[in-house]
Length: 349
Image 1 (cartoon, one colour):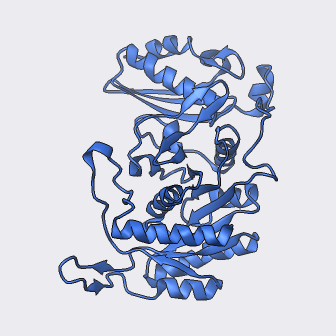
Image 2 (cartoon, rainbow, N blue to C red):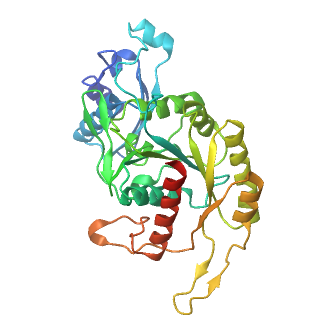
Image 3 (tube, helix red, strand yellow):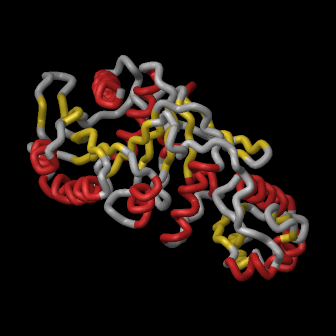
């Protein structure tokens, strides 16, 4: 495998928005080959679209067809000057109904935390599936751009379908799922900067065929960085759930995320205290491995309520329907999530 072979193969793949081959647009930014593994950086007129999904699948197929063992892809956008020089425009091509429209019936629930490692994605996934089990129409956006994990947690192996200019999310446990993980190959790292991330998120809202949803859960990155700020700007009426552990430090940094929500006029639905305790199956005794009081301190500071306390645990693994982080409805922890979901429904009706 050589760079010349790769570039020759890429002559057959076009940037749909410019109707020109990637090698013509200057869209092949970087080619690296090591031990027959190919790594590419590709620039497109638009990213985060149905067209990008088709292009990345084509690239992987054609480069592997040339003999590569694996193909890693990173995407960025052509500059406005490049697009103009190539005769393109930056106008969106889809003008249909948007989930962001003022009259949209969808309630947006942003799940956030002050720091990583508190189980925020686990809460997001189980909250979404519990809302679906209660009869609600639910979607989830894995907006943790650098640390996407929702597809793996829910046992999703397939990719979204692309029809025309629309992306149709994967349906799992009655939840419609879209993730940054669908837009990279071979688990390649995502090395994108602030403005680029905002465009990607916006296209998750506008280019995905969500249909009618009651709830759209957003699994946000931890902290108060670019993605969280973009979400606060895009979704002026988003409601937020803060995830913390009982540890004082986790609660302290979660308060920062909560303060940002309040300052941007977002409603805080409440706090979920994860890893609240360990309950022995033998004696039923509770051990407070990470201490106590973090959730209580957080709700006092933010003047909100504790939606629930999730103990340390692990879902039963079903090899035939593998989803390593989703609790069954009748699992004791699954029942806690159902209770939290019902409280959220009661608060948002």
